[in-house]
Image 1 (cartoon, rainbow, N blue to C red):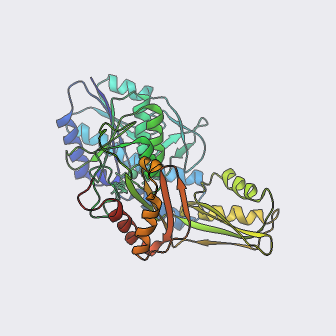
Image 2 (spheres, rainbow, N blue to C red):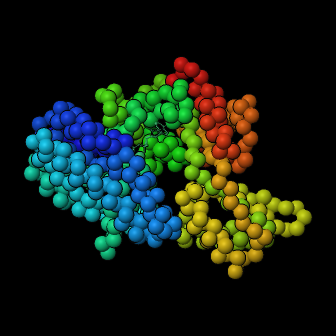
Image 3 (cartoon, protein in one colour):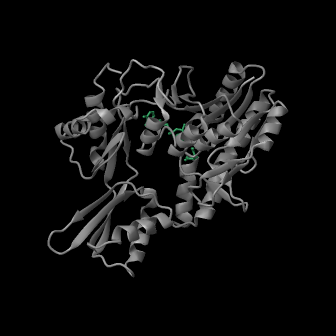
Amino acid sequence: MATLVKKFGGSSVATPEKMHGIVDRILRERQPDDRIVLVVSAMGDHTDDLLTLAAKVNPEMPKRELDMLLATGEQVSIALMASAFCAKGQPAVSFTGAQAGIKTNDKHSKASILDVQACQVKQALDEGKIVIVAGFQGITDLGQITTLGRGGSDTTAVAIAAGLKADMCDIYTDVDGVYTADPRIVPGAQKLDEITFVEMLELARLGAGVMQPRAVEYGEHNGVAIHVRSTFNDVPGTIIREEYTVQEKNFVIRGVAHDTNVAKIAVRGVSDEPGIAYKIFSALAEANIDVDMIVQSASATDHKNDILFTVTQTDMVEAMSVIESLKETMHFDKADIEVNVAKVSIVGAGMLGSPGIAAGMFGALAKANVNIDVISTSEISVSCLVPEKDVKTAVNAIHEHFFPEGAK
Ligand code: ADP
Ligand code: ASP
Ligand code: MG
């Protein structure tokens, strides 16, 4: 008897026909004793449509109300999916995040899962039902509905899998697995049979939208076996695991990621004195805004600095208002924002002991005539901020350098 959690993203459940396709596949593939939980996203572009609607009513919609609105998207798909199973004679029941016991903190729009109390889910499984859980949403201690950030259904699935001690968490999507780059941008991208949690987390964090970073993190901390695979065929996908099983391969770079949801904010003319960076970044942290690249450039003459950093475009309006609010207590000349930028990154645990990797990336960009703005590094990644118009050229040039045709 296996407990299996299967997550289907928006494009996988976009139409009634696709929903019936999923039902047929699950009923065909399952073993008699399998306990099956499906986690589903909102249908197709429903979440984007709700966001557009929200912006028309109030461009600065209170986050609590936005969560109320966005959580309805997943509620549509769970009810339809459960009904699709019932139409084929298979008992099934749908649960919202709250009913499935997804307990979160109160950070509306990017809440974190604190606990999973899946008693209703377990009971329904005991009764022989297939359980359909709404992804992307949870509930606080005080009964407030929250959402988990874009792509959050991945995290719901991994958390449910951890809560049920599932044997496998399948992330079904519209590509065959995790590739060496986004296959929609790089035609020659290669599918990876396996990838470590650490590398997948870094790729996801740097923009590889195939998995939400928090899902990978949750999987790693709770030892959940994750298989990223296609909804539309049976080809084996990519297994995310602790360590590689293929020892003889000496992987250096595992993938190239890109992210266009980036805004660069510059706070110009801040005093060159202790405590300034602390003031800026603690205020941003207080507002729950993730800051990514940070650069300080000093002016030799007037004891003033420019502090540049990047945030997601989703957070940029709030970040700018945090910066403006600091004007009362901290002097600076001005703050400006640039949105026509993108981040390209290479990721691989093997780069640790391989000098010249960063130079290879910069060389590829130079050859492609792409100008680099900010550079940042971690132990297993190098990232460059480039003009947004050049992102496709940049990703392809870097991919070509590290993954020449035919190599894997
Ligand atoms: P879902 O709706 O199933 O959650 P997403 O759109 O969130 O699907 O994620 C799948 C998409 O992730 C793919 O269509 C692909 O364009 C994108 N993607 C970005 N980077 C990668 C990568 N390295 N490997 C595979 N897919 C990637
Ligand atoms: N529906 C949400 C989104 O579009 C959550 C998800 O798809 O994972 O981001
Ligand atoms: Mg997704």
